[in-house]
Amino acid sequence: MESRIRAFMDIPRMDPGYRPVEERIKDYRAVERQLSHEHIRAQASRCMDCGTPFCHAYGCPLSNVIPEFNSFVHSGRWEQALHLLLSTNPFPEFTGRICPAPCEAACVAGLGGDPVTIRQIEQAIAEMGFERDIIVPRPPRERMPERVAVVGSGPAGLAAADLLNRNGYGVTVFESAPRPGGLLCYGIPDFKMEKWVLERRIHLMREEGVRFETNVTAGVDVSHHYLRSRFHAVVLACGAREPRDLDVRGRELEGIHWAMDFLTQQNMRSAGELVRTEDEIHAQGKKVVVIGGGDTGSDCVGTALRQGAESVELWEIMPRPPEKRSPSTPWPEWPLKLRKTHAHEEGCTVRWAVMTKEIQGLGGRVRGLRAVEVQWEPGSRGGRPAPVERPGTEFLVDADLVILSMGFVGPARGGIVEALSLPLDARGAVNADRNNRTPVPGVFAAGDMNLGQSLVVRAVRDGREAARNAIAYLREGRREMGADRW
Image 1 (spheres, rainbow, N blue to C red):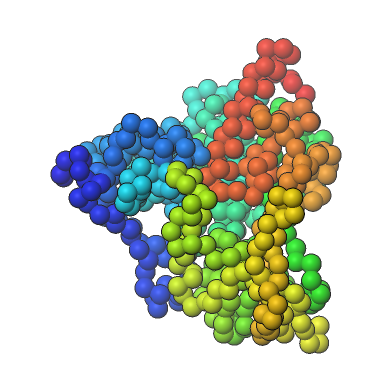
Image 2: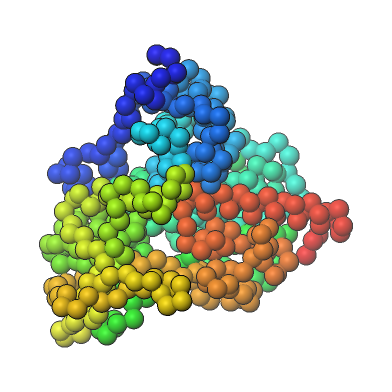
């Protein structure tokens, strides 16, 4: 392995790339390839070991110590790299696959060239840990008398449960679905992260003492009185499940579905779970329009194409971003620029700056959409920009399946939020303070439920923060009142 001094100049960035379209479109296996260990070591050598590592201090929500683990990988000290990575990130096998890598956007090497392939290096470190049996069950040596309930087993819930358990607290995770994992299990398609990756981690956590109670909806199947009487603290990590709706004529027609319902059903099929025929959403032979151009919309495109859709269009109301970083988002900020996913290359048409005007139907079912091109203009008195229709640009598109993927506006209504009378803030998220504490003593909010819709990596960070704050609360309670806080 050559010296690192000029590696970022002499060694080009290498991305693993994807399996060929004609191959991957026929299955739901992971589309991204993996670099060899030697290629990973070469890519790690490109790290500049800069004086101010913006990747660590600015880019990564978990504050991963990136230059140092790159150095360990470059020198072949994989175990040291793993221990350093796990000190900040409990689930590098997840983030190494599905994180959009804000650390790379803040990489100093990216100022004059290509950033370091940090995400792939992180994934390689994690997989090496499993291959060498370094990542194995390690139950806590001592158990505390207090018990904590975690409601929701998505990224934030798993992160909170992991940290609480490692500190010796008895943890029970309540999940409304048949399998734990939340968004990681039912929202993210297998072609982005195969479910054996999640199942491996869930098995590990079970071996370490975390209990998972599935098919249990907090606030419905178990009351908040039950949670407050059986547990000394409760961490709510139920996600942001309330989807943003489309307020247009024809919205009531059959054949219009939420993105998460569509993705969840396919993940259920892939896992062998039963999908009721009367509720089935399937794209085979259909003309599909996905409204909403974010990551979830891209996942819907990839899923529809694999199901055998006749055609797929992806509509986004925002204008097409520039090919390169916009001056409005200078380094090291997350750049505004065009990002093409693997799904965009698999056979869909993308329309930018398009607003849906009407959904048209026949016999109670959707048959097409009427839309118009828009341009974004500044709001009055310096207000937020707003879309303005461009005259003469209306058009019609045939569609018999419409997927709404326009984001989320807060946690699902009802359930535990309503049972505890938790107030919501202006974003629709649970109104918790900077320490994740809700107005109900001993109840904490974490992840998208607290932050609003965000990245998996930010949900993991907030889950850990909520766990730390719950631990502080329990220790305070023990000092003041003994173990029986409630």
